[in-house]
Image 1: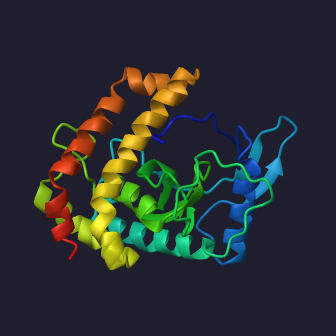
Image 2: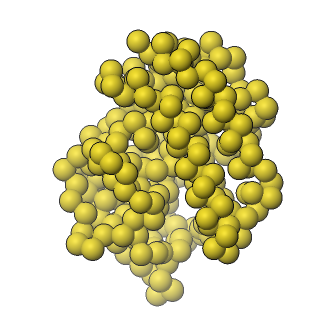
Image 3: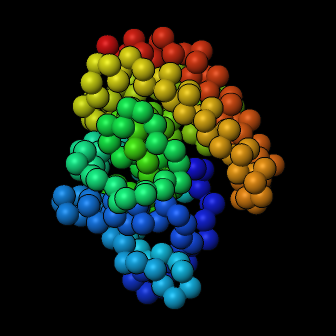
Length: 251
């Protein structure tokens, strides 16, 4: 939900990471994606003797902060919108296993299976071009715009002037938000709510961070100690302040 919250190790051509109650659903989802021809995601290979899940290692570069130039380009933004649309379309007929548990709660209307954390650090790039999405742990049923709104926050990005990660003037944010929406082929109803959905999404993220920290999750506690929750709150306020302007740019 913000990068760096899981212990992941590479073993040969695979990666191993902690499993959880949600792992069977995620593995079933990854199998389904490949069956539907969506190959820009890792394959799942069950669990190892230590109970860790086994996934394909996808060679390339993850988009870690500070972001390299190629992650900030219009071409990457367009690629994110297109690939996310393809991902969502491939999940429309996905039937979760019985007694499915998701790491993140389902959100209605459950139009697709959302990735849950479309951000540069969960993308693999090759030669400066988007190649794949990774880290599907936060996948859950939800509306298309719920996923796209967070991708917009991370890639447009819809950040306030105090966010040093990547900030652009509001006119440029509006232009790039339109590019992303067009690449995704977002419907009119989605365009009317994507800005406000991005704000809501950040508010949910802050609540999740505090819930996890209160439950003893050291990684989220570190994020809060570093002020990440305050940064998300400031960015949510920025989106709320410019909601009308951003929405008008999509009409």
